[in-house]
Amino acid sequence: MEHAQKCLYIDPGWVTAYIAAMAIREIIKIPDKRLRLKSEPIEKIDAGIRKLVEDMFETMYDAPGIGLAAIQLGIAKRVVTMHLSKKEDEAKPYVFINPKITWASEEKSTYEEGCLSIPEYYEEVERSAEVKVEYLDLDGKSHEITAKGLLATCLQHEIDHTNGVLFIDYLSKLKRDRVIKKFTKAAKNEGKSEAKGGSKNEASRKKEEA
Ligand code: K1U
Ligand code: ZN
Image (cartoon, rainbow, N blue to C red; front, top):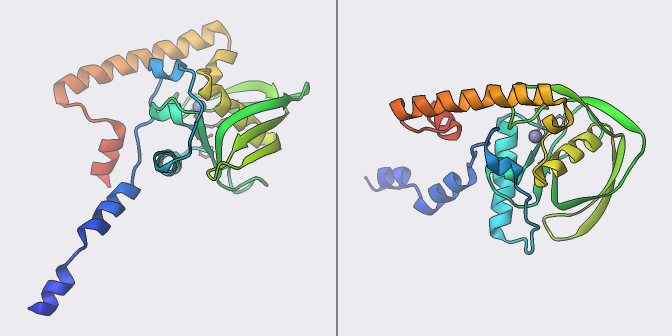
């Protein structure tokens, strides 16, 4: 009996820690107005910021995506996570706190971009081929990175998010209006079904499916 009790005992502290570590958050989608906010700089890298970064990685890998800005989780702080495809040279997890473009090349390059806040919509966008970006790491240490290829594209896309800019802003008004209209209609329909069938978001639906 004593043995059985020992085997069944689960430390509640460990369970709490385990649940706290598993946090896939909801990614907000257009036309959510929060995506147009200018995010605030991080003054102090504390436990809250470290937990936010963990959750951003979980959410980004789950989506799946190669980059994420905190505002896409509805949090207007200048924090970006990134992990490019394994095929790329720069394939490692990156955290950029208060990222700032300090130089952008005149030379341009075009890439077919996507956005987790505008799912399943891809369009070619022209941006600087090379950029220099200053940022802090999770220890508050300052760095400057020189990026080209997908890393340069993704950095510009994510830094745009921290300034309330979306990749559709670089498209023609016709294309932009068309995609905004489509997502506005979808959000309204979702609102109607939520009223009928409860108000579950994507994150809680995924949790139930798991
Ligand atoms: O910021 C975001 O919305 C994430 C976005 C980043 C990005 C992609 C392409 C060009 C610029 C910026 C994405 O991750 S969209 C999804 C995506 O590109 C992808 C997903 C799985 C595997 C490979 C790529
Ligand atoms: Zn995006």
